[in-house]
Amino acid sequence: MPAIPSGAQPRFGPPALAALIALTTLVYLNSLFGPFQFDDYAVVATDRAAQGWAAWWETLAQRIRPLLKASYVATHQLGGWLGHATLGHHLGSLLIHLAVVALAWRLAFVLSASFGM
Image 1 (cartoon, rainbow, N blue to C red):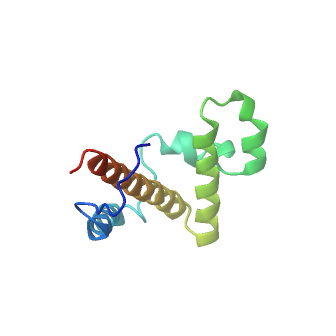
Image 2 (cartoon, rainbow, N blue to C red):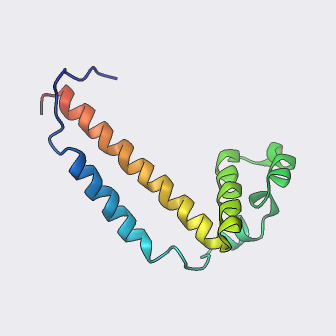
């Protein structure tokens, strides 16, 4: 990763990141309590390996995307803790998207600083 010049300030600083996070959250709000859609039933809602760690572990050797399935287990358990299965999955998805927004903002900052922008 290129070194960031000392004293470099992002062209669009933390207020821009906050606005991006708020906008991303706003876009997701209407989906939080929505039902599962399309392939969610086969991939998440009815697959026991997406609902519990023991089943996930038992089928680990047969999976091509074990980390994805592990995220389903974690969000399924979050939904169980919240008392709303789909809410857990939607919150997990929102958190992943917010992390990607923050990482993309950081990458843009590093690249703009390295090019003197």
